[in-house]
Image 1 (cartoon, helix red, strand yellow):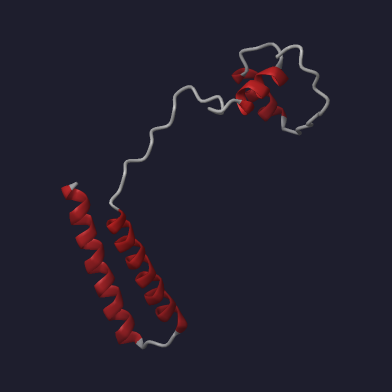
Image 2 (tube, helix red, strand yellow):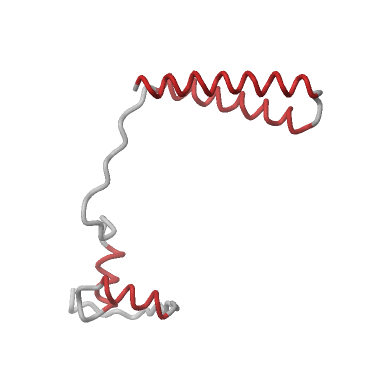
Length: 109
């Protein structure tokens, strides 16, 4: 790649501390060459590939999305002021129960 004619320039401003950090990370004498290699490789210069997320049951994802939508609706109603104090207390109690059940489920995993 040394024979490639580079015609574009990118100027990057940084603090003295940022510059020193880059120089410490750069094992090469030429910072620009190191930055090209680090930023333009498909891996992004990562030393190890990131772990792929585990596959999740699509039905579970749909259920979780529905739960999230329901929680958003409850939050919207609580914040709108439509409900009285007793309604809000009941909602908080129900949410606390849901939180306890979720904690139990997490503990089982």
